[in-house]
Amino acid sequence: MSTLRTRAAVLIADDRARPYAESRPIEVMELELHGPGPGELLVRVDAAGVCHSDLSVVDGNRPRPTPMVLGHEAAGEVLELGTGVTDVATGDRVVLVFVPRCGSCAACAGGTPALCPRAAAANTAGELLRGGRRFGQRTEGGLRGQPIHHHLGVSAFAEYAVVDRGSVVVVPDDLPPTTAALFGCALLTGAGAVLNTAAVRPGESVAVLGLGGVGLAAVLGAVVAGAHPIVAVDPVAHKRELALDLGATHAVDPTTEGGTVGQVRELVSGGVHYAFEAVGSAAVLGDAWSATARGGTTVAIGLPHPSQELHISAAQLVAEARTLVGSYLGGAVPERDLPRLVELWRAGRLPVERLHSSSLPLDDVNAAMDALADGGAVRQVLLPHG
Ligand SMILES: [Zn+2]
Ligand SMILES: [Zn+2]
Image 1 (cartoon, rainbow, N blue to C red):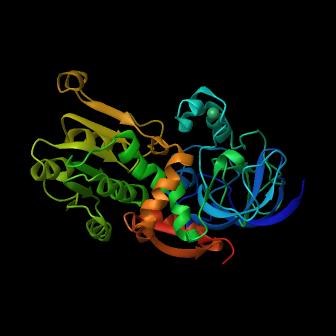
Image 2: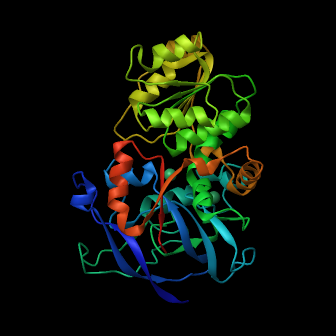
Image 3: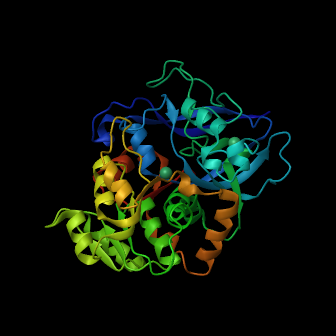
């Protein structure tokens, strides 16, 4: 088992005020990285997307143990194999997946690996699937020798990552790393919610509330599914324009007259067949519910703070034969879905690279969190090796 040194972006505390470029909740520092152990891999991280779920750990909306090396949407190359890993080779290009797959539980065997209880326990503890952490402890900077945690089994805001075999899917060499990274979270989650969780059919109407990387990936999924019309909702004008460019038929600014619900219902009489919430707000999920037609389905993708609650009419749920469904990891089976999504990208039907808004060095991670929190950025990608 080897040990190497890696520069990594470590979240020190989740209670710092914005702007993060000044309060610096994340410190970039050199860490020791041990491994890979049995069933694990060492990956050189070539690109890592900055996703709202990273910001949610920084701002405390998604409570996780700190210190923690953030980053859960990434692509890279396999450099070293732990013992027992025989179906991946060094030199393989991989996309990292933020729910590791144990492969032997009922959820994994039943085609719902996003619900793997071993993965959930490891991710909540900030450990790898087989237990424990692979980072050496530090006493410099804001650290006082505490164990440094992994983020969702990935921790990709670093030059190198040790991950479980169940955290990677091998992808073709011709996929550029900045594009490949986005497949790991935005595409699996957003397009997956449309294609797997909702299973939207041609001609069915869709509204997507929130046009970050995941919401725009849901728009791409709706286009591929043949949905019509597709209503894209976001207060930021350039995100609405991008959604229209990607195939949305209408765009709605929720801050203008009628709000989301009034405007969506005006465009699609009676409401949409499927409304997707991709903000992480119970209030926006309530809007999605109200914009959904009788007999329709409201899909929750975003992750609000655990204290937020949604209040709906129980009678309406029954009498209007509605469905309210949560979608985690887009209901995906990553080994099955990633190759299909990559082939759609190759055919020009999933222009994933359009979601990539900028590339940044690891040292800009705090400013990247500010840009994401401000709502202007779609998908910023960190390049740990420059
Ligand atoms: Zn994500
Ligand atoms: Zn499992």
